[in-house]
Length: 354
Length: 181
Image (cartoon, each protein chain N blue to C red):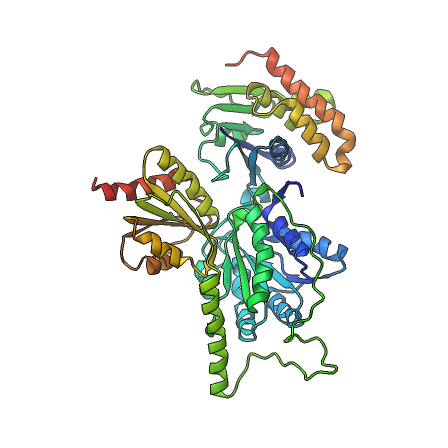
C-alpha cells in the first residue's frame, strides 16, 4: 500500500480497525480526540460497535464486558482519563482479559494541560490500579510505529491474555507523517476457550476477579506472574543507533527518543562517542540489552518529558556500574534537540574530566 | 539536506492547510516530512501555527528552535517569529504593520491579502504566500505544489482548484518583480 500523510491519532484508530477491532468504547479528551472521532465514523461503516461512553469509568467497564466475549476491544484516552480507568484495569488484569488501551499522554498532574508529556510512565508501566500486575507497554516514536504497535498490541494482548498499553504522547498523536497502513484483516471468527460466548453444549465459563479463598487467589497471582516472567523473557523491544563504540549511552523513548536521535547525530558529527537506545517496550523494559551495553559504556543519560521516571528502570538495568544522568522537561514542554545536545555535551565533559 | 518551515497566522487564514500542502508535495516527491500543528490554547482563539520539516534523511525532531523559514500571516505572528527565522522570513505585508529590519536573513514582504483580494477571494492569501516563498526558496517546485493540490484538495473545494493555481502564480510573479532586501 502507498504511503499517506497520517496524523498519529487517526493512524492508531485506522490500524485498530484493520487489526479487526470489533468494539471501541471511549470518551473524548485532547490530545487524543481525533482517534475517537475517526472511529465514530469508521466503526459504523464497518458495522462494528462504537460507543461514546458517559465517562472514562464507564468506558473501561464496557471494555471489560465486551472483551470477555473474546473479541478485539480497545479504548483510548489521555492522562486524566487513564487515571479514571485504573480500577477497571485492575479488574481486567485479575480476570486475564486481553485488552488494548491507548494513552496519548498530556501534561499533569491534575487536569494539567493538553500539551505532550511522558508523565504517565510510572502509571502505565506499574499500573496505578490495586493488586499486583503489569501490562505490556508499547511506546511509538513515529506515526508508522503507532500503526505497527497497534497491530502488535492486539496480537500480544491475545497471545498473553494481557493488558497492552500504547503509550504515546500529544506530539505523536497530533503529528502528521507519511506512513503505510496494513491491509484490512477481517475480525477473527475463532472463539477463545475462555470467552463468554454462550454455554450451549459446554460447561459455562466464569470470568471473575474475586476469590474469597486465600489459597485460590495466590494461584491467580502466581499465574499472572508466570505470564509476566514469560513476557519479560520474550518481548523486550528496542532500537539502537551508534552504540557499537559509544562511551555515553542516551536512553529515550517516544517523542524524546526521536528528538534525542537528532541530538546524538549532531554529537557524532562533532566527534563525540555517543549512542542512543530507544526502548520500544517500556514494559518489559529492555534491561537485558542495557545491562549488556553497560560493560562497554562509561556513562548513561536518560531523557524524558517528566521528572525522571524511566530513570529508575535504567538505573536498575545499569546496576550501579556507571553513572546515570538525567535531562527532562515537564508540564507539556517538549525539549528541543539543542537542549538535549547541551545535556549530552555536559555529561560527556564529565567523562573527559573537563 | 533539511528544511524547516513555521507557518503562523489567524484561524481561517489557511495556515494549517498550506503547511499540509507543502508536506503532501514533499511526500509525493519522496522526501521524509513531518507536519505538526499547534493544538494548545492558541487553537482556542488567536494565532495558530504549524511546523513542517522536510529532509532527505529520517527526521528526528519535528519541532525546531530556529526554523530556516518562518511565514507570518498577521501581526502577532510577525512579532513572534521575526527574530526566530534563521534564513528567510516571509510576511503578509497587507496584514502586518511592521517591517522586518533584520539584515542577517532574507526578508520577503508579500501583500498577500491584497493580491488575493484582486483574484476575488481573501482566502487565497495562503497560496499567494506559498507561491512567493517557493520562488525565493525553491525546496519544491510550484508544479509539485500544483500536483499536490490536485491530489489532496478537499472534494468540496475542487471548484476552486484553478483559482488556487492562479494564486500560486500571482505569488511567484510578485517575487520576480520585486527586488529582495
